[in-house]
Image (cartoon, rainbow, N blue to C red; front, side, top):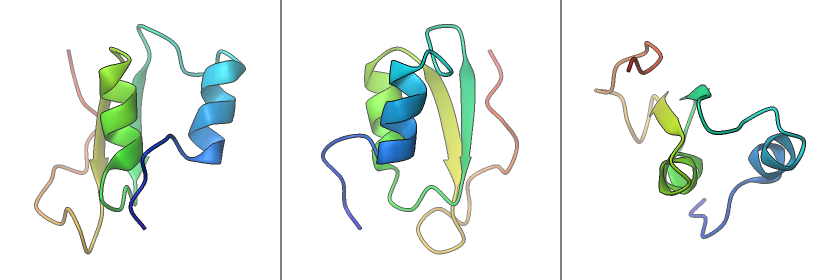
Length: 64
């Protein structure tokens, strides 16, 4: 599934302040990376892995 906006869980986490600037996010099963792009656009450090769409990415959280 391709996204133009954040997924509902990420949108809620952003609106509730669970994800905010200074937060590091790792999306295990990130699919095509729509949430990652959205979070990075907001200046939030985000990484992800997906067995189909990003199998060569690190499975470790991003580090500053």
